[in-house]
Length: 265
Length: 299
Ligand SMILES: Nc1ncnc2c1ncn2[C@@H]1O[C@H](COP(=O)(O)OP(=O)(O)OP(=O)(O)O)[C@@H](O)[C@H]1O
Ligand SMILES: [Mg+2]
Image (cartoon, rainbow over all chains, first blue to last red):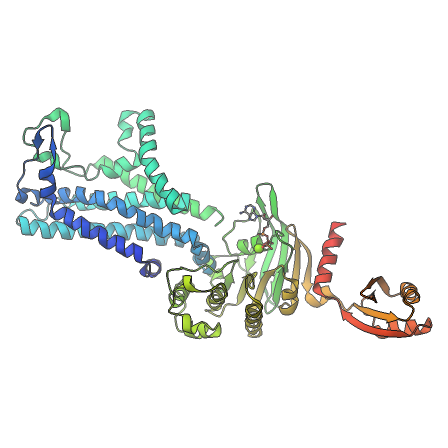
């Protein structure tokens, strides 16, 4: 296992676009997190704005969900890196060479699955660090150890999305079409689901399930709750979304192994 | 002798195209085995299946007497069609990746680069290499762990005459160290120059498989000339051990049965009252044999 991760790291080590995008991503994310109060105070809807203090925004345990939800948006962009690391292997035909040299097809997929989990873990650790720093500097350590379930929820949510990207990459094998399929899926398939699936099942479709783990928290700062408009605040990781996400994660992962083990390369 | 590779009735169907049709072969340790055949005869498909990048429709094969696994592939060194490396990594890092996969150390990398004359370019990115350099890096990678079997598909494809000679020399050197080599090519003279054994494929079937000496046979042909060429032609046709005659560039080419010598033919001519003004024995080339094999099969 460690050897496969080491191999993957050796492949990526000299691939500059990967590191540039990764560092830019975390740079912008931290800026986004640190200026969250500025951004939120700009947002207005029907003459109303959010009402909050900076201290409340970064206070434990709320900070985990506030920042987790913010980080989730940024994390989607890194899906491109997952797709790219895989489709590169197909376009350079190095996946064939890896197999020829003595990697099994299962090991090849495992090295990419490990990349997915490592990137999700990296994001989660970053969220934890940023939350700790921003929380401690803007607020106090009171309640520090509560609300960590959002860190777990964030990890599953991001790992699930990256695994979905990996699955699309293995299916399509080329970078640009894979990204198109990903975007197309988000629009066309989502519409199709809405049209075909009964209401209760809708919330269990893959991207929806991943997205429901850390839900939008900022409605808690709307002073006069015009209930009908915004719905209820979900300030926990919903268990049914977690189960659905883990199932989908497993399904996409299994599909990657299944496809790669069966076809001509 | 130990059998390194055994192929049993391998079949590969691509839609309506049957690329391999119940192909069987075996390769002994220490031989340089040439897989010969016209374009599209199934050479690359065969090697691809042996290396698990193509799934066979039917049939089995075994490496080193065992059902194939990725562990058995680690004992092989292979280049299939084009050299495949990470273009943004330098030569050394690319070889490190191969070493990681094979589970061997990095200590032989320098010496391998030296062997293929790339030691000065080891720090340069693979994408900056010329085709010949890429090909040579692939050879360095394939022999990095001193494989028991080296598999090459058209190893001299796209190289200039000097590059071709260099790669052939490398192959011979590697063979001399006792490495078994399996080489696919449609260049007959390449196979004739380096191979000890050969299998001729056509439309996914073996037409012939055996030692190169056996396919070439002991048979020779002679080129002869005399003052009266017509009389010579008649005499040649009546010679019991002649299998065919044809006139080419002012001389008569007489194909002789296996084991017949030029001396015997000369004696026959003298007994017929003909004095030869020219007599030279010609070794039949693999190319002729190959074309004959294909022609026989077509009938
Ligand atoms: N991916 C594929 N899809 C469909 N048909 C294929 C595929 N790959 C090979 N074939 C067919 O299989 C047959 C054998 O091809 P193969 O590449 O093994 O030939 P080859 O002996 O290596 O030829 P060459 O000397 O040109 O390299 C050909 O008829 C080819 O068209
Ligand atoms: Mg070929």
